[in-house]
Length: 447
Image (cartoon, one colour):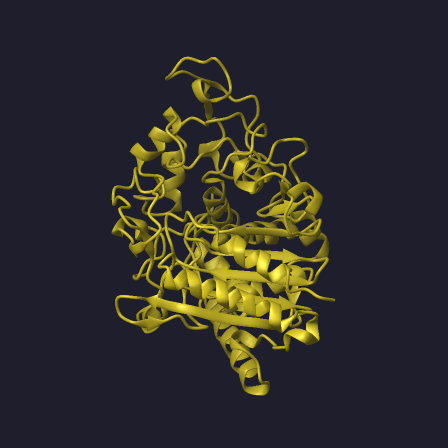
């Protein structure tokens, strides 16, 4: 098995070339950060008067202390038609929310990790229906915990899995894995006892611990949100021979000009790093952190939230499921690449057929789970809309999206040629701020 290597001369050259390309973009046209072109709302079929409702609503939430600050960005027809900020990024230090504020994007890391896997798929280095154990032998013989596998099993008992989880299972969250902090099954308890995602040195150690814990469900039979995408990060390391961080820098962040997206925030950028807030009374204990809290006001979040999720020091644990920090402009470039069939500004990351594959519903009759809500299926890293009649909310058939634990949210609507990004930092997130932003965006479409 090949192990990750560390930055090569080629890697350094790619990063320098990407940085130079970004400088050229900024120097040659009146663009937003990261080379994003602007347009007036009316020029892309949006009503400026209706868009004004967004700011009115969001400012009210700031005034009512539901949030400290947020950012909204809308692109249509390949141009930024709306970019507004509200409130403060750091209330205690009176730091205003800015267009280049850096946010913890948590599970918005998952679509990026999924693209990394699909790059390797395009190169013939793996196949989606391959068992994961082909590449990570430690995961080849996982047992299933019978007490939590929709069976009348006895607590503490396991059985052989009927099939191994596949790469596609990990991409669509049908691998039988869990998270450890959304439930209290015996498997969840084992995750917490092992310190998965909270006390791992690196992805290799994480997978080693995971290999000793049974699956919660039979692979391929249930959609269940879990550490699937973190395993994919390790898969990228093993197949590519690079660290996951280096692969992302070389193959996605550098080529796309995502200059502020990383697993850690360096000292020169920390003044732009938003504070993380939590509902008042949120416990600092990791096992209780995500418990329901009814407070509507927020306060600085307990320190437990930052462990292994965006470090202020160079990271060693690269969580593909939730470890990245980014800006709205960086993430918009990623979204524009996906909406552009895998390409932006002449830089191609994926082929159009690969994007089509990723944004198709892969559930095949498997219920897509409560987190995707009625009306959504699930593709390879994205929730995929089955249409407004199924969802009962604004959407288009084929719209795809995901969000992050602290309230960040994005969606890409190919039918409307529309991208929306909403950034906020509240964890655990119990508000409907992102959904409200989304509805207010759709009601502004007038063409």
